[in-house]
Amino acid sequence: MKVCSLFSGIGGIDLGFQQAGFDIVWANEFDHDAATTYRVNFGDKHLEEKDIREINPRDIPDFDVLVAGFPCQPFSIVGMQKGFKDPRGNLFFEIGRIIDVKRPPIVFLENVENLIEHDDGKTFLVIYNTLAQFGYAVKYKVLDSLEYGNVPQHRNRIFIVAFLDYNQCARFNYPEPIERTVQLNDILDRRVRHDDIYYYNASSFYYDEMLKTVTDKRALYKINDHGVSPRKHFICPTLTANMGTYPDRVPIIKDDYGIRKITPLECLALQGFPNDFVFKGILLNSAYKQCGNSVVVPVIRRIAEKIKDSCGDNSLYLP
Image 1 (cartoon, one colour):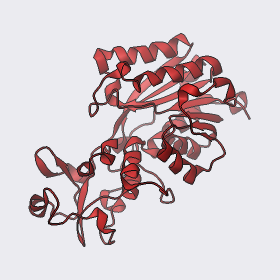
Image 2 (cartoon, rainbow, N blue to C red):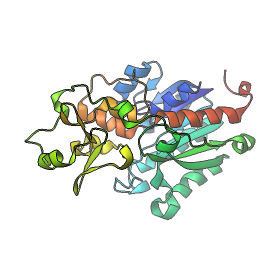
Image 3 (tube, rainbow, N blue to C red):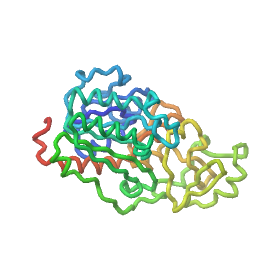
């Protein structure tokens, strides 16, 4: 089945669907750095680096599934929560504009958990009703990557799946929780000496407190408004785009060489990206931002597999 990807970012959703056997035929991303990372890892043949408001839906090749991790900042607890009053929040209606013209059989949307409760549920109701008015049967569920993605990171996200075929919707079920086998130290190699840019030193803010607090090489720590504190059960908190704006938002660890931030590649691993996914030609803060804006790939793959299962005879879709 063929996929059209909107707000593609670095391609986390695309990668999950690709791993499930879908074919990405067209993608759109406006942020240049994210588009750069996407091209490095997926190639340049199907990515349109352009403002979605300038996209003519009729220029998009035909597809079976529309996927979109539309901007979450307007609805996030970490953000200002302006919702549709934020220009980024209104970008959801650009998705609706494309759906209205193309009418794909399936729509997959991802966003922050708070989308459900934002503005007393009115924001989510607009999204739900928009899909319903286009004739879609809609299901949605909040999944935590810790339980559904086999990664040691808490990340609650809402996943909306909509079908034009009501029977397919009835057959679709979200994946079940799985036992987590990947541990924090399977991802963080504390024996490797990284570049000095990642390490704290005597001139660093909070360094004295770090020396007293960051002592367990099995653990991961976070700087917050109250100082430095360990994360419970050796689990990473939700990685956010703010890591690119505020360096002290990057989780920290103790390794064999000192106290340091986890690296962007370690952030990717905590999001379930494969080891061959890389960053090239972008600044460090942009890499952190891209990690925080992305998704946990195994969760996406598992949902995509369930979507495929619900479709039954794939001959009904584009070859």
